[in-house]
Amino acid sequence: MKEERLRGMTEALCNAYCGENYGSTDFDALANVRDAILRMTYYWYNFMPLSRGSAVVGFAVMLGLFLAANMEFTGSIPQGLQVDWEAILSLDPNSFVDSVKRWLYPSLKVTTSWKDYHDVASTFATTGSVVAALSSSDD
Image (cartoon, rainbow, N blue to C red; front, side):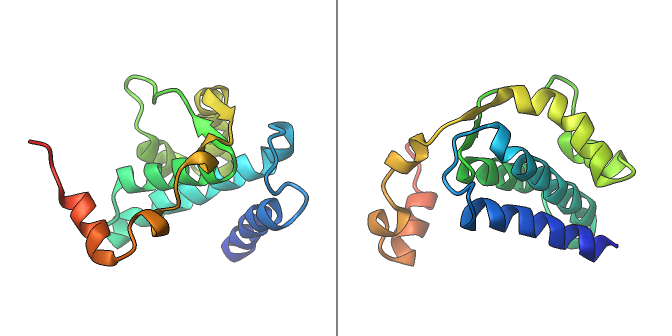
């Protein structure tokens, strides 16, 4: 059952990037993608204690998936709410999606501004230059 759900989420994301929704800026057309991203986030948070994962990594990946699907999160997490605990304490992915989308979806704005940024591979040609950029500090 879980494998079937995961396959469905993966298909929704693949269809968004390979199908008619690729590059879409129609917020309604991306509804399945939004829900699939949140279900994947639910599974990350529930697997996290077993894999020594980090809640902030899961949230950053979720935001990256939204951005890759032309949706930018412009809000903030509500005061007193922890997204990872919302997932861990939810009985199933759908209840997690329902609880999170109330505050998350109104803060998602359709954008393609990320396409104006330089490609990382052309900016940092070697692994060493990436490590140097991530290790540098202005302190």
